[in-house]
Amino acid sequence: MPITTLDPANALVAIDMQKGILAMPTVHPTAGVLANVVRLADAFRAKERPVVLVRVGWSPSGADALKSRTQSAAVTAKRPTDFFEYADELQADAQRDVLVHKRQWGAFYGTDLDLQLRRRGVTNIVLCGVSTSIGVESTARDAWERGYNLTFAADGMTDLSEEAHDRALQLIFPRIGEIGNVDEILELL
Image (cartoon, rainbow, N blue to C red):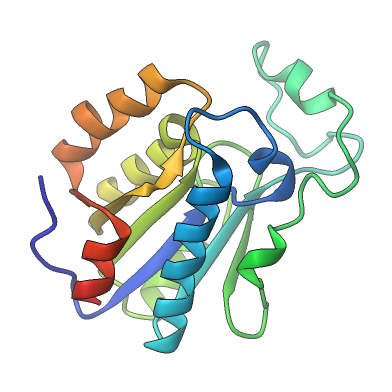
């Protein structure tokens, strides 16, 4: 469904825009995706709307990570020291932005994201980030179940798989929110 409106009480939620994930081989160049997310973040900040930057990470030992049979190797894999850091271009600032540290795919489970949004009166979330079919989709499903109106910035997200990216945008997201591009969202902000 195309974007029709944004609720007055909206927030940007950017998923996993961190150095290590942005270095992965995605179907759309992450430099362009990051530039679009930065445009959104700058516009939301200028309008004094919440900017929520979510990143995934766990302790060096992996003791706080999800330990399913399928995720164990991903948790213990050797990573560059800056893997979990937000991309510099986002200018993440704990005094200004809401910074959320998650330990699994979705940004709601085990975090204070819902509390932070509700305290600010947010009813509409603009979602973007990497990857479309994992972090963004998991967060979107959880947000929808909590009653948030969802707006997806299609050119502010990418995935490791083109098929998975397209599936989320064509089959899942239209059932739970509205989809558009960054320019359309900026016009409505």
